[in-house]
Length: 268
Image: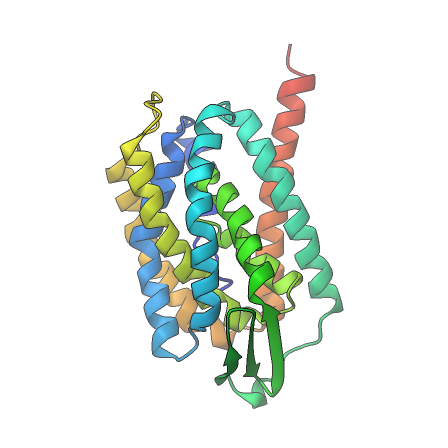
């Protein structure tokens, strides 16, 4: 419902419960995305809420970042404790921004409907109308956001959606009902290349190849979840979606940071 595939929660489950800590866990997460996301993307297209200009700039920006993220993951973030601390700091910032946006935003008016109308889109800016309000954003800044998010997403194995969606809502002030579809589509596209790159393993790092069967099994459950999330989104207040999204991001970030502090400073 929030444009997050769920991969950012699948990864800590693999690390904590399955003891899967090698870089291959990131590639396995990408397989989950490839299998799970199409259900949600299909639903957003069917309801006419797939804002393609936003999906395009997000995809173009995140694609090169995924490749850079792979190198960073294998070369500098091989230690799972350091890796989780790095992601935790990023998610902490995003979660706080999203929570701040939630506190200051107004409640939704469901009488205005969910029709999305494209007003203009070019290489510089895009604008649209949604629920009788006009929104616009700079494609230039959205591209660079996507690029840096793609690096983080490539290292983590989430494709960037878990970070892009909250950032679009909290910083660019875009409605979550519009952001969710493009964020999922961009995540799916970048995840395909992520699976390819981790499987290719150009650096020859041990344990970097993804577990195809595990990722596929996660994805089977995920495809139902993303479809139902997209199907139910319009019936759930955006305040509740933002709260769930911010709580999930903050909980995960604080857990990662706490793990790093405890193992670095309090473990003999």
